[in-house]
Image (cartoon, rainbow, N blue to C red; front, side, top):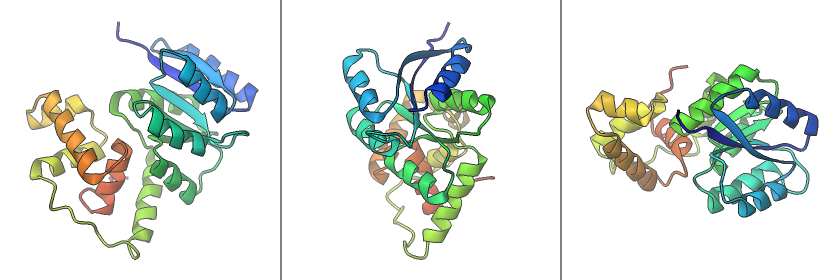
Length: 221
């Protein structure tokens, strides 16, 4: 049996948090490591626990230390942990800001339980997951900022890297990309790491934004 996905839940609304915990505990492949009610609690739990979560499902509006600031700290101290932002805000600027600080998925609180579970599984498998609404927002935000930001230089990317970046934008997994291009998964990982370094992206989500910004890929929405 494959390893379970380890989750930390962070939300100051206890009833809401317990509801999500109850929902996720029914999934065979998901294990809840711990819960926290704000960013400070979360960071101290991460420091204390030897076993780290794979994914943090994090509310953004919390007392003491909010989810946006907590995400910035975690991206620096625990870069391997993926953060799914969970919020009641769905404004374009809010979504764009969360992607910039390093969230790999963005869910609105009135989402369905099914969407939450799909998002967790997709993030575990691919490293990021954006639903249709978020993809639309990314595209609109980038288009509206095109006037102030010229298209960046992309000639330093090799044809193979561009090909892999386009497949990443189609939300394909490393093994799917490897199969498609007749490469080993390890080679694909190498190209992906080079892309992160060359584009100075924090994560796969950043690569997608970079690709759209530079017209390397368009999103089929």
